[in-house]
Image (cartoon, rainbow, N blue to C red; front, side):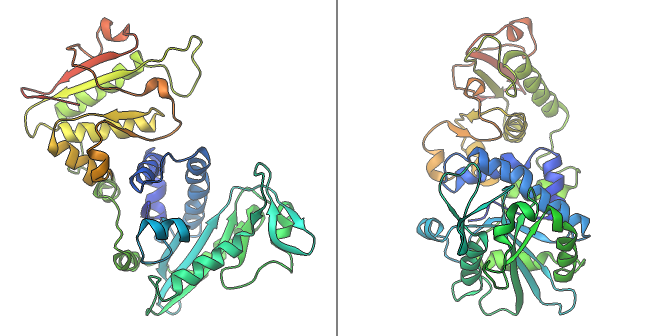
Length: 388
């Protein structure tokens, strides 16, 4: 399993474009994990970004970040359930030895902990979590054993590997039980808080060179038979320039019209309506072969999810289904079940789209602006069949 692989600076660029969390949420569904929880989305939006910012601050924005990465080369569902996933694997080259340098990272948003038993720090209480939780270093120790062991991707390679826990919301004093002399030890046992961020930056500089080494992470993922989705790679490598996914001329006008219509028709997803209305909207795009319907669909899905809306799509086009599957990450089984919900930032059922017969309307017409529940908007690219 792999949700994302990006250099730290590219992850921040993706986040600035409001694409990071929607992409991770879609990949979470792809791996049949169900809906991503509020806690997971919060960790992606905050902890993951904090770590990337620290890498950039340490002048190590070139270091590759493998997010929610399996600890072994076993890609089966059973292995994913029993072994878990490493929050982040940092991959680069060692500045002195020139060998592969890897750091396994456990990210926590905890602001404080208390001991469960005075005699041990193996279990702690965390505010907001009912049951005691394991010291994060113990979890990292298990991942370390798997990642560097016979079934791990580093098996047979020359490497330096360590690990650390990062509690960016905490102070040393507020998580003192995790830092005491009785805390677990090992090459993966370092723990950083907001108080020790400066030390984290220095340690990152000690473990990774500033030189680009895209091949290091690529080699590890190749051994695990994992990769990014092509859409993500295209977005990152484009640096804002044109790609096959860039909308042009009439395509961009159509997408902008749909987004403008959604603002008129649907309640804002980030605030509660004075009079709740379970509104839905349908946007239908028509056009001949090669007019850009698939590219528009991909762009609209990303933009609407980034705005906090829940999106479904329905299509009779094998080409569009293939584009969604290849570039977003839906599985074959999801394609055969009909319209499929895609998950982005905060869920709000009243703004999810649903499939209904097409209604020909100008997206910004008075009728569209005054549309009630079940509004349908039809946008035409040119002659051809209707595609959703």
